[in-house]
Image 1 (cartoon, rainbow, N blue to C red):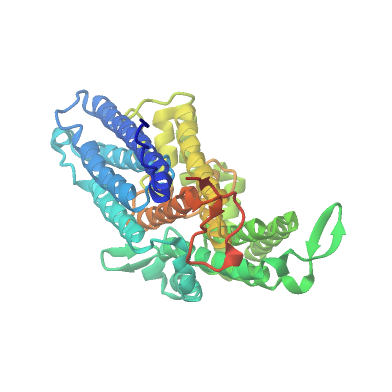
Image 2: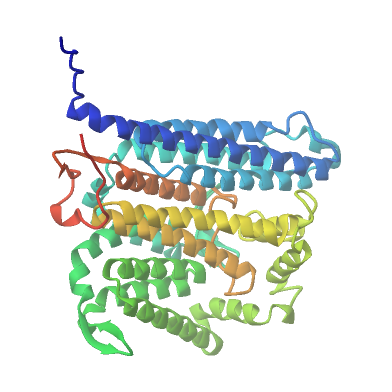
Length: 496
């Protein structure tokens, strides 16, 4: 008598189970990290109240609880719509966003009358507005994940997005200063009490166009005309796209009066070209073009003036901020003093004097936080940013299509470059810029645009990490893109 044979699992079932376990494991890891991040945000809020109020109110946990509910909602969206996405992205961004809301609420407590501080409502002041903007931004990111089930679908609208990006970039430059200028930089569009920074959304639209364009022109841009010092340089007639973007970035520098925005746009294009071609020569050409153009603008501002004057003044402040510490150099000097006062360990959350810093809720929030958490705390924040950038680059390496590689790589580099521009400005490494610190600074435009950036990275990461099932060792490649885009990273095969 023979034992009954156990029914063999079907190929579909055998291929599905490992993927389901993998997705569940990643999402559970994400949930654990998210809870830890929100616990740190709640602890930060308690320490702020202990230093500012000399007590911890029974409601100290309410802002952290509201943020936890918002981010848990995003976690559920990812669990169902992008189950294989990187589990570290959401917790890292949530921690930065939560600390930003906590610090802005700390500013509200400092601005309030001493008798009213303990009763400050959760949604009052700039901290409350940032909490509301966080809800809106996370909802937009969730909506983008729901609409964009395949990141390659947005390549169909690449030229439309490219045109929209150029319009958004140049819009503040052509508007009157009364509508677009704040603190010398023309980056805004203000209508009554409503204001928006269109350049934050332009970088996303332009990156989609850059990735689409370079996928099709990669072979041409990779051609070398001659070799010098071991580096292959491109042909002269292939420099056209870089020169066009260089001219646009210089126009931004001159007419929008902001070095950071100009560097951001040109830098993300050159970095995307490098990712596409793997030619170091493009990086060298980009550096020479940008710094040469910036120096030319400085010389013209010092001699001719006119539209170049603002950049020349900012460069002079950068070179010698202590030459006029109570007027033109006041903002930079106060930022340097705040960082110096913080030392290694800082004055403690709520123990500093951030109100002495102009624009501490926007441009100089990193200096304000640095005074209270010190060099070690700021280093930890920079490591979190570095983690997000590294995870974005890993998504670019893992995804199988060229468009996704260029898109994710460009987005990750852009986020890192924006942080560099901000930190470099307040630490006197480069001239001051009008850029906001991602996820920390007050403002809806920056927060919404950066959460949309994270949503795209999550979608690309999900595509790159998703197991590809096959039978008999044959790989079923993803559909939705031309065959020439499906190459690069090794494909994971789950055999029955």
